[in-house]
Image (cartoon, rainbow, N blue to C red):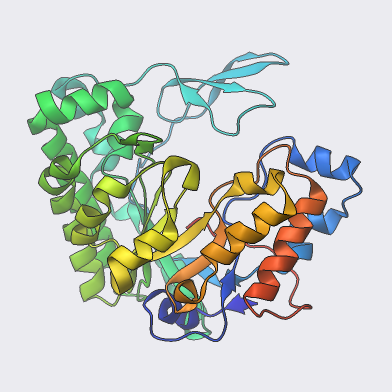
Length: 371
């Protein structure tokens, strides 16, 4: 089923729903399609369209809030095992072929306040950040039921993109003036973009990407979130919400338990992907936070390589009646891992659909729900 923007917003704000929402957030890891083809998968299964996942009719508002003038990528090395490039931000980045989908930077442009000042213009306000034609098209799509969204830079993730994780973490402690200047720049640009775009279309959904945690916990603690990130987040959310936005979603892998409450205070009302292997339990989170937050994901992807009984137990727990009361997109907690048998994935989808009382035959299609 393709949901309208209003249906999706009602679901995620606990205001009612036509049915349960069952999706695939990210899709397969590299190598899995080849494994499945060898096991007899149809092309519809490879493309995930055969599994009848739900999606949302979503369009971009025509807003650009991040790095404004990306550089042309330059290939420095391209071998069967790896590809090294000078990327759009001027970083030397390496991609290990056959193992990864994201290149990892080997160097970063910012180490000091002086360095930041040389790239600050890339995040500053510029009228070119608003695509008026796209905003007007989005308004037409919204009138026909679409969800209108924009992306804003992560308060931690963007600092990490500029400095690397180690230097970014140190900077939050040793160079607070630079961190504040960065976040104030992001806030000024994002709020101006939101106000400009809102002259043409109502923005429904703000998305922010952080990826700021590992298995042992987040790289910033509650104090750093409330001291540094909250002013930025609140500036964005208060502006957008005041102009009609309903959802503010955050994407972060890893164990975010320690900072969920602070991020709710920052305005976030949708969290994903909620990885069980990192200690994230969507049932415990629902019991703790009630209707203050919605979640996407949370079903253990690793259970698909276990027994049918273990798949049944995982679904019985994660799909229990409490979780079907709204505010939930049921999905695996990240990409479908290599080694997942095709028959196990088929069984998972069939069993979940039955538990969620979804029709055995439904609209075929797949829409990446990681937004």
